[in-house]
Image 1: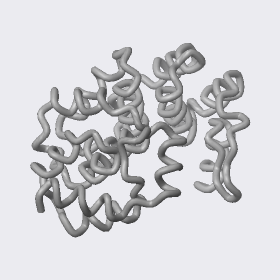
Image 2 (image 1 turned 90 degrees about the vertical axis):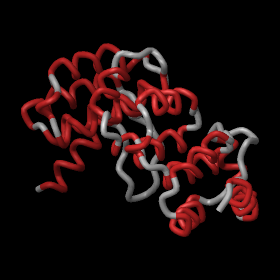
Image 3 (image 1 turned 45 degrees about the vertical axis):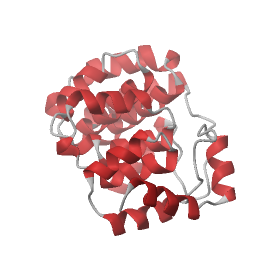
Image 4 (image 1 turned 180 degrees about the horizontal axis):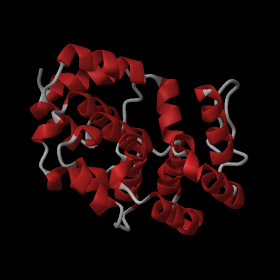
Amino acid sequence: MTVTETLEQLKALSNEKMLAHNRKHGAGDNQFGVKLGDIRNLAKKIKTNHELGLELWNTGIADARLLATLILQPTLLPYKQLDNMVKAETFVPVADWLYSNVIKNHPNKEQLRKDWMTTKDPMRARAGWSLTAGCVVRTPELLDLPALLDRIEKEMPVAKPEVQWTMNTTLAQIGIHHPEYRDRAVAIGQALGIYRDYPVSKDCTSPFAPVWIAEMVRRQG
């Protein structure tokens, strides 16, 4: 399948409600408004196709980039190329799919994490904190958790919204998975108050760190 054929298929799946939803959340007009489930179904048909994925990404079209994250081969992306991809994408759903499907499976993700944790670029910083939240759960030996809590306490109130979200995730994961730091994580969340009044659907857990931590600890029994 060529990039032109793929774009034609995406365009045929355009949905007006999805177009409006994406515009509301920052996608602009460079999109087709394809439902995420339809993008996943198309990716299943294409399967892994790294070259097509790169061509789709380079179009800059939001739906094409979402599809690209599902068919790219992370091991074939050079460090600098992935770094540039992260920096260039400001639409959060695409950035999150890039993280979930590519970044966290990249062979150099720890070096990327270290570099992104010191950058001032918001999208790279967002990805860096996402990787750090994963380390909190899976490889905490790579981290200095008290120092991370110090950074979160100092930096989260003034961080850009894109970064604040994944920084908050890191705070919550520390509280959930490391009982020795739970009280401090909860105290930081309470003092900062970030996402305290965040609207959530019924039966969904609030992203407000103290509530999130308490609910996940309760589920763990």
